Length: 311
Image (tube, rainbow, N blue to C red; front, side, top):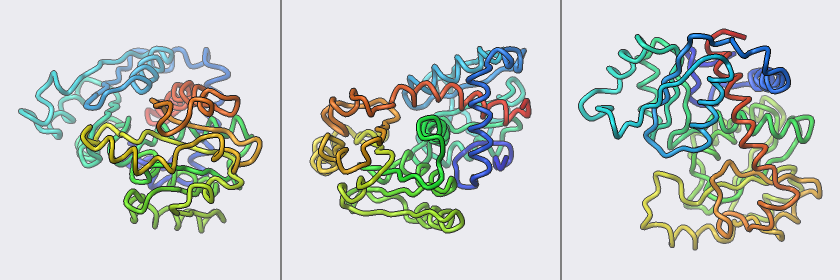
């Protein structure tokens, strides 16, 4: 695997082989979970939460338990994290107690600092810039539904400048998938990430498209993907203006009709019905959102075992 310095901080350095290997591992763990029930006996994961969490917290906690290990949950609001104690000191001290760290932080630079000073593996559970565990889990879900990744078209509509879009761009282009992002001009993905994704796509004979035309993006798509319009770092005062900006990018029956008839709908959750998608889409037969949620468990177990060199 190409985990940078034994950590998983983003999909920047991931290639097709890395993704395929993790999908194979996660699929095996999902089918034969009992085999791995003592793989992490007497091992401990520190889980650091600066952002709210449901699926991340539950999936990592349950995953460690099912692997024979256990977790310690640390809410930053209840600790001296970054206030009285530096991130580097937190990393150095924690590394003396635990075997692996998962952190869900606001800033990408903070998790990179945490990893730099940690002597145990660090997993990015979400930052403002990247969400690698989610996208790797999504790749597992897509592979289960479509039996392949290469050559598929994924259409993302909504806020292009967020962690899901960034790692979708990097992950899809690495896997040989065509990705089209439909978003307002003022909410485009970070240009340096687009550039990196185009480089990956060129290596894998796939394509990257960024446009403000939502229907064009969804045309002939195999997967239509939506995400919240109000990420955790967005001030609540901007809610009304963002709803107005993103309303043309809502995934509804009309937009889904532009995609292939057997297209699936994805949203990493939490989801607001009537906002980024309508209820008839997310609760309809094309939706796989709860399969996505379940696969966080299986993929993250594979990631943990890979980082800890137990598989």
